[in-house]
Image 1: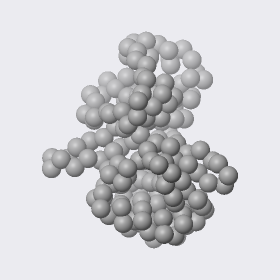
Image 2: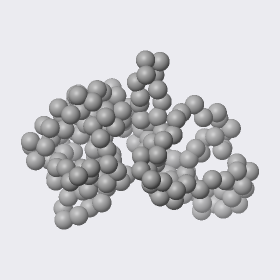
Image 3: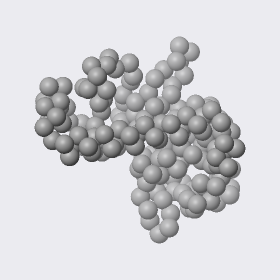
Image 4: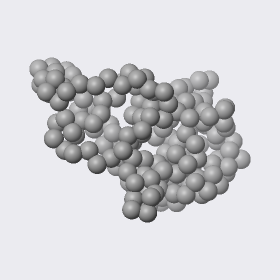
Length: 179
């Protein structure tokens, strides 16, 4: 209903990889409900959150009798899937700047609010949380974020990240495979 929830995995060495951040209105874990898949991931609220909960039977009954709801659920799943595929490309082929820029753009698409030609990401992402999203160290993310700030592409307003020029940031995030 409200708030942001991250889903992540932890490596044997204790490193965290954030797989997705859910926003108000998102439905999860869909794989558990539809495929009876055991959830092997951790979920943690990032902000104060209110969640609704239902049984598998009630959820499946609800979506199976409502084609428009099922279509919308599938649309959202495909949107997430395509976002994850894009993240994988950047994680494999991109350099540090590509990875940081691309995750900021993904967050702008999912959580951003357009305001006077800028995009405000109001999730409150720390450098450590960005690092967990792109599989890098916090220190490297901090260096890349400072470079973006010096170029005038982003600024901070408290814990909010403001993208000053989305088009220029998109150009900055183009790794070799995308050119």
